[in-house]
Image (spheres, rainbow, N blue to C red):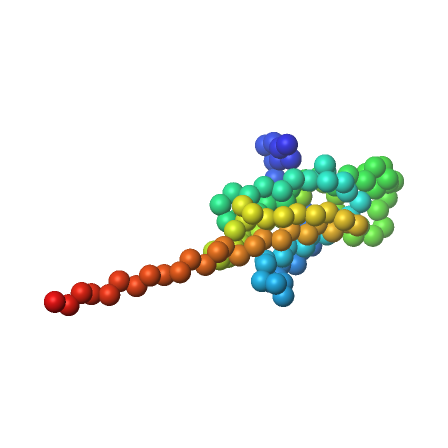
Amino acid sequence: MNFFPGGTPDWSPPKSVFISASGDLIVKVVLIQMTAGDFEITVVGERLSITGEYRDPELSSARQRLIDGIPTGRFNCIVDCPDEFDPSKAQAAYKNGALRIAVPRKPRLPKILDLPRRF
């Protein structure tokens, strides 16, 4: 699915990014009145990208907008994950207008120190 053929996004949805009590990186994005098919999540390297389009026929056909606080059109939300997290193993869930992505930490490999041999 290509949401931006030859164009750029019109807006970016509100998001929060934090480390949970369990140590995962959590990305929460508010995407009201959408279904999972209205957006897509891609992972390239350390970057998560959420792209899509929000359409509201009632707003689009409004004769006059008096207060325009609900963005419509194409959107993009980018999160660059810190090095210690593994976006390729991220898990996503969408419920009640909120997208939640949990990115686990990369496993820590033990470091083996070489000791010089003395003869």
